[in-house]
Image (cartoon, rainbow, N blue to C red):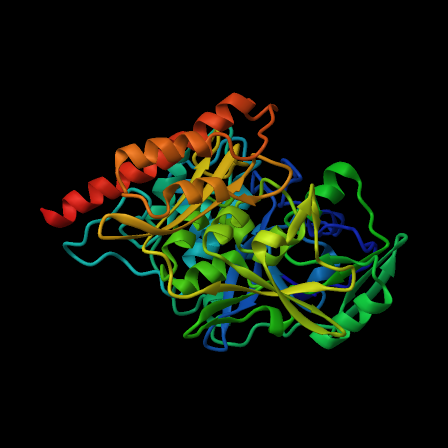
Length: 478
């Protein structure tokens, strides 16, 4: 792979070695390990990824989660590659000027995340007279780009100030110029070392044939979940099959009957390409972990784990999503509501992978995503709900409600839906349905929340949704 403009072989790495460990073993110790689970951003690095115009985007990701083997043939830039003590990169210079670093442990990660936003092609200063929200700077800097980077001692204001004073790249900026050339193509890989084997198939058909022959193989997309298992629980799968760069799994098409999203398209890319066309997902994305995680995490990975507390299943259940499961023998389409069968168990066969997610059209008129967690951003939910309702003439004509965190699997709140459909959308109906919603699922008590709290949050969420529709209707009539 190419690191900071220099070719480096994968010497000394095993099939399970993370990019962070490999970088540090090669002497590039700027990237730090703070949490080993993608929550602190101290290990952030930049990866050259394809853009929509045949060029390159510099995308910030967590080096602690990505297998080094997954970067075979790719280009990455670490904090050392941004600048030097004698010639600081503009991001590093602004951080120093603003006093954005004290102990310095997190600073390389901040610099890389900040550089990714610095080089975002469509970043533009606000026009005169435009209102600038608190999460976007006058220079167009999106503060969410730093949502996955934590600092324990400096405080965030000087870091934000540094970000908001960044200008545009100079004409002789090599990393800016690199954006006009194509990103490296995916390189087929078969790497065995350390008791494990890492394979990147050349095509979808090759991947499906491999799954047919090796049904115990572990599928890898963004590695935002597996990376945690490797680092904190010592998981060492004998065979890992990487599918995140297969073009057939990175599509997004909007048709007349449904929106089809490739299972391995990073969530940041889905968010950008949809550009608010699915309002329920537009509410979900900023609450799904951090930008660093969304730059790698995928719908397919979030659904493939079968986790009952994943953020995407409640929203997709509310949208009536269906999954396209592919195997060497062909494809089948299943309703997401029928996909989960038990705790981290699904109907997906050992020789199948999720090829795409299909969201039927037209979309419901009233939608919302509610995530109850201890932190506003970058946290695991205690309870998550997706709402999708059609209300005509003041009467609920259709309702779908997806729940997460209240049972062994994500689920549809069928009883609550029945309590809403055909009834007037008023406070009496909502209160009655809220009582039903509180009894949905089998919430348990754990370190995040008690079962009683989870039940109360279910009921209050429906009341919150009703209140928001009343406020919106008043604003429209005014």
